[in-house]
Image (cartoon, rainbow, N blue to C red; front, top):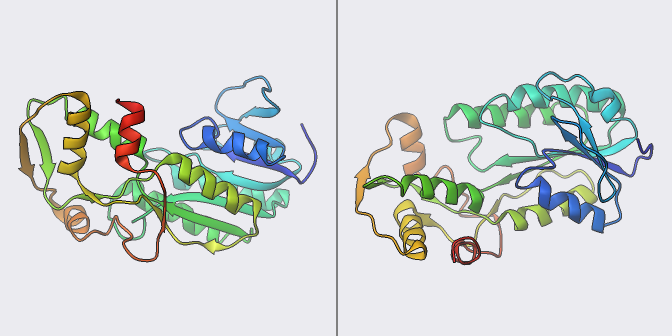
Length: 256
């Protein structure tokens, strides 16, 4: 392994965001090491190290000589556990900057996976390792998967009051690399897409791009989560940095 503090370790480096971030780091002349669940050969100057963050085994070796960690890995559950394992190892290894990608609304929307994101944020902030956290809106890819799945139903359900401000993963990648190459900045302004949409608007845009029609049916999200979404707690309407690429631009690229 490369033993220089110029090395940047990326968790989730093969995912939607990580696969965009890694080439940008290489273009910036940085040595990059990627954590992966499965071993892979070095390619395009990028090292791949097999580590399961939920187990934490192998982190000590993976962090040898690393100055900056980009924690981009995430899932439906266990983010808090994985992050605590990473934080402990990063502190022991003398990491100088830990950069984390979180989600807008992690501190406001009462859902279990968002609570784990918030717990991960806290673990990083309390770690003693200099840190930067960026909360981003829902990626276009995730939005597309959602509306594509719902469009397979005979009737498209539209939760009343649910609004999204989807952001392009390329815009997020550029921002997270900028933050990683800079100094620790704590919690930075959120990053959201350039437009706010009701779910019905997103659905109609997708269906039009696919040349399909579906009747819609209003539904209500129950409980505290429903109230939070109707209140726009998943949005940052003031003070956010804004990405460039719109949902419409993305649909043209992906759907045609």
